[in-house]
Each structure stands twice: as C-alpha cells, then as structure tokens.
Image (spheres, rainbow, N blue to C red):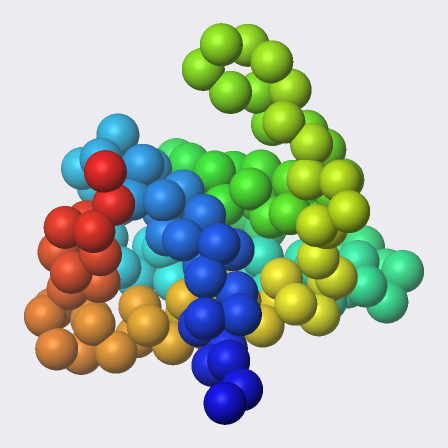
Length: 136
C-alpha cells in the first residue's frame, strides 16, 4: 500500500508545526490567521524562488514575522540551503535528505489547509489549541 502524503512527509510537516507552535508559545498575539498568513507568504516566496524569481519581502506585524522566520529557517534547512544549530551548538546539515521546492511548497500548503480546518472548528486559535497538545 502506498504511503499517504502525511506519512511520506511526516518529518517536514512536524518541523513546520514545531516552528509554528514555538513561535506561538513565545508570542501570545500569534493566532491562526497570522500563522496562515506567514505560511501563505512562504508558499509565494518558495514558488518564486523555484522559478528563479524574487518577490518583495512580505510585510508583517512582529508576531507574524516570528512565525514566518521560524518556519522559513526550518524550510531552508529542509531545502539544504542552510544548516541548523542544535542545543549543543553543533551544526545539523540535512545533506542527502534535502527536499525540493515543490515538496516544501506542498507541505506548506498542507499545513495551511490544516490551519484553515482547525480555525473553522475551534475559532481564532483552533489550530494552535489542537496542534500544541502534540508538540513538546
């Protein structure tokens, strides 16, 4: 039986959720709408980048910027564009496990769909109320 999208990209999806929840826990102003805006802007940035274009830097409120920066750092790492530094100060490279722009965009769109669904069910923080219980 073929893997589902979520099974195939579980690590990337969890990384994005972790980045969003971390930003949420650090900034009480962050809500589902702000997170969705940050994710949608990243889709545009990576789509342009994949085509060799650049777009104007999106304008954010500070709480939106935190979500954007946090998710972008993880996506850039997953693309193999930069290393991350772990708790002991050593660099973690993604190496041969790097993903394509198309894969990262698909994962961001999947997260956006999840944010929209949980916001409809649970209100302005429905996504964060749901996903926070699974992210340590």
